[in-house]
Length: 125
Image 1 (cartoon, rainbow, N blue to C red):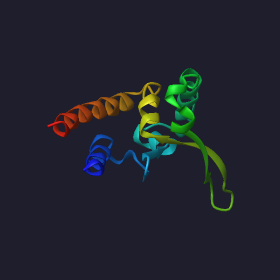
Image 2 (cartoon, helix red, strand yellow; image 1 turned 45 degrees about the vertical axis):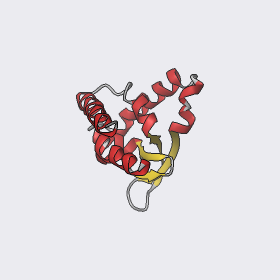
Image 3 (tube, rainbow, N blue to C red; image 1 turned 90 degrees about the vertical axis):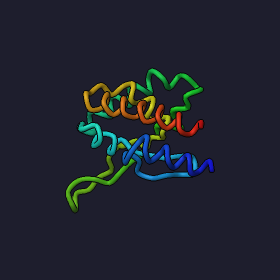
Image 4 (tube, rainbow, N blue to C red; image 1 turned 135 degrees about the vertical axis):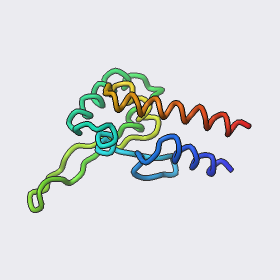
């Protein structure tokens, strides 16, 4: 029963932002966040850095486990190189949304909250 509720929430609250599901919950990355929020990836990175700087000192948020530095291979064929990206958990995304200030990000944040509260009502019945 718990896994069914988890799947419903992951699919309907957050939509198709998630790259993969893990035993610990869904995970996305900064590339996907940039795409969904209609931003350049290079403009998402400062928001992540600011989030880490301001909230990283709060041990209870465990940013090291929720916004995880990673790399991906990108660039023209034959000239690929390692580029910085971040893997982001569900909780990490909730914190990161506080630092992404674009109309699209605010709309998505509002949609996430709306769907969460609607689903919460149904799941508690």
